[in-house]
Length: 261
Length: 329
Image (cartoon, rainbow over all chains, first blue to last red; front, top):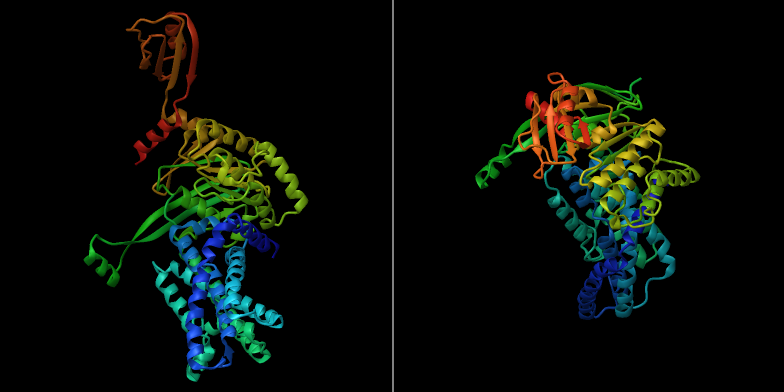
C-alpha cells in the first residue's frame, strides 16, 4: 500500500503547486450556495414552517454544502481515463509495477482532497453567514465515514465510464446521464426527504443515494440506524462496482490498441 | 538464457473506416466498416543480456508496438515472447520490477515538481529501501550530471536536462534491461552526445541490456553494437552496426584540407568528388575501397598539395538505412 500512498502524496503536492488556481476554481461553490439559499429561503418562508420534512433551513443548507463539496471536488476520472484509453497514453502508465486502478485511486485522492477541503471551507463560511452555524461536531465522524464510502462509489462509477472507452468511441453521454442521475436520485439538488415516498423507496435500491444523500444527511442529523443502512448499502455497491471495475480493466487491456509506432 | 526472445510475433490492430460526409457518418453508425492493420508480422529475434541493440525503422514500421508488447502493455495476436524469462502480457507487473523504460515523447517525471520527487516516488513504486534510494539517487545524479537539477521543477529544465533526469529515473531500481523509445528526440547535438555517453557508460558499468529505437543514426553508432532494421512489421536486416554500414554502402568518405588551393579540375581516378570548397582549400570524396585501393587514393591526394587535415569515415547511417529501405520496400 506504501506505493499508492506515495502516489497520493505526489499528486497532492502537484495539486498544491498552484493553490491560487484551486481557490479560484473553487469559487464556483459560492455562486451555487448563494442561489440555493435564495431558493430555499423563499420555500421555507412561503411554507411558514421552521422545519420541513425533518430539516430546518440551516440543515438543508449544510446538507447541500456537503453534497456540492463532493460533487465539485470529486476527480473527473471518467474523462481522464477515457482520454488515456483513446489517445493511447494509458500505455505509459502501465510500465510500472502497480495496479492501474489503485494508481488512479491515489491520483484521484491527491487531486480531490485539497479541492474538497477548499470547497468546504469557502462554501462553509458563506453558509455559516447566511444560514447559521455548522452541524454539531458529534455528527462529523459518521458523516466522514459515509462521505469516504460515497467518494469511493463515485470513483468506481467514474472508472467504469472511463474504461467504457475501450468499446465506445465517446463516453461523454454516459457521464452526462450518470451526473443527472446523481443530481436527481442522489439528492444533490433536493434532499431525498422532500421526495414522494415511492421515489425515496426506489432510491434505496439504486446506488445514487449512497453516493450523495447518505453522507450529507448524516452530516446534519446523527442517526445510527440511517448510518448502518448507508454503510451496508455502500459496501454492497462497492463490492459490486469494484469487482466490475477490475473485470472491465482486465478485459479492456486485451482490446487496447495504440496508434503510432 | 537470452534477455529477450521473440518468436513469430504478430500484432494486428482493427481500425474503423468512414468516408467523408454526413451520409457516410450515418452509414457508419448502422454498418461500421473495419480493416485490419498488421503492425507486426512474424517477428523473430533474440537479444543477449547486457547487449546494446538498436531497433530501427521508418514511422509505422512496428518498432514502438514491439516495445509495448515487450513491456506487457499490449497483447500480441500470435507468437511467443520471453523477456528476462517473463511472458510480458501475463506477468507485466513482475517484469516491471526488472526493466526500465524511457519513451522520449512521453515524460514520466512530474512536470510541476522537482525531479527528486519523482525519484522518491519511483523508489516507493519499486519497493526500494529509503536508504538505498538515497544512495542510488546520489550515484545516478553524479553519473548523469544532474546533481544541481534535482531540486528544480521539471518544467524549468531544458529538454536535454530533462531527458538526463528521465533516463536516470528509469535506472533507479537497477533494471537488467532498458527499453529506450526515441530517447534523443528533439535534442540538440550537444545534449544528444551527453545523454548517449551517460547511457553507454551506465549500460557497460551495470551490465544493463539496452534496446533502443531511434530515427537518429548517431544514437545507433554511439550506443549499439548490433542493429535490427524493421519495416512493415518485419525484420529486413539484422547484423552488427559496423557490418551494416560496410555491406550496404561499400564506400568511404574522405575529407581533405590543404595548405594551399588545389587545381579546380583536380580529380582522383576511381573516386566521386562530392564537394570542393569555394576557396579550393578542401575537397570531399567518396570511393569504393574494393574497387580503388585506399593507398592509391591517398597517394593522389597527397600529391595534390600539402595536407593540413584528412578524415576518412564510414558513410552516415542515414544513408545506409535509406539504402536498405530502397532495396527492401
